[in-house]
Image 1 (cartoon, rainbow over the protein chains, first blue to last red):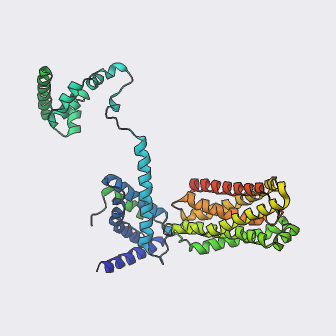
Image 2 (image 1 turned 90 degrees about the vertical axis):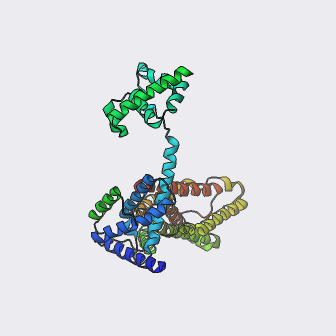
Image 3 (image 1 turned 60 degrees about the horizontal axis):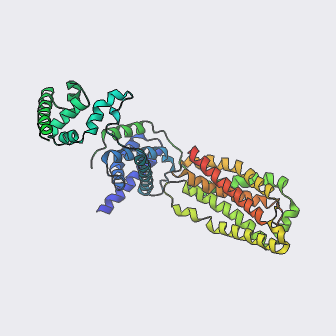
Length: 188
Length: 215
């Protein structure tokens, strides 16, 4: 049953690609839409992150478009497509390996300014492990409010847009966070 | 079956909208054959001016040099055929092995002829023969052949352009080395062989680099 389905799919894909080579845009669009799940299945063997996987699928679609003149309708289309997809997926894996090796993630990099005075508050926070651990120990909502409003010094409207929480909820959370931090730091 | 995501969906629509008719590539064996016939036609015009019949007949009288000449030509043909196959996404990478036996025969027969020359003539085996001429002929023939071949191979927009161009480079270097025998004294030193190898290596490296940039 499955092999019948595979044979029909192969036949359709081959026919649509041959038509696409002759300029049939409708057949080409049908083909590209139909092969996307197959491409996702091939790519998912190499890439787990859904966003990266989709990037690679799009890269393969672009490659199919670029090299469509190399398909010979007397040969199996699925083999042509699978080889092409595997090679692009491996290329993307190599590229991402090189990029990941060269990139470092520093969440406070955006907070560093050329004027040393501007960094005082952040440096004080970074250099005080007691404060850091006290903030880390806050409940999620309070910690987020402190980070956005006090450490990153965003306005209530900006913090609300970024977190998706209402202004009044942020006000309450930051008030409670300061209260509990004060208690905790006094107790130490 | 999940539908394509929004951006994939948009990409498909854009690709389909811009899909003009394309001319299918002929089978790689046919394309390689056409290319080799074109080279043979050009060679038929140039070689009468370039060939030294005394040298050539000396070559052809010795079976060892006949083997060497055949090996260079077969390496060239096999590597060109392999390059046209490798330029397509669905052809086996095993095609890369096609020129290997002929290349081994070429290196082996050249090495043997140099060694024999060295035994017969002593220290002459380590002297420069016509190294500069050999180098110039191989590189000189390879430049126009390589440029013409890259244009033809680039039509397939190969997925591994460096590897395909390197294979094509080996092909043209082999053919150029075959042409060299029409004008090159049959006695060769080890240094001549070294220069042959450097010339072939240079042609392969340059075509590979240019191929990577072009496609």
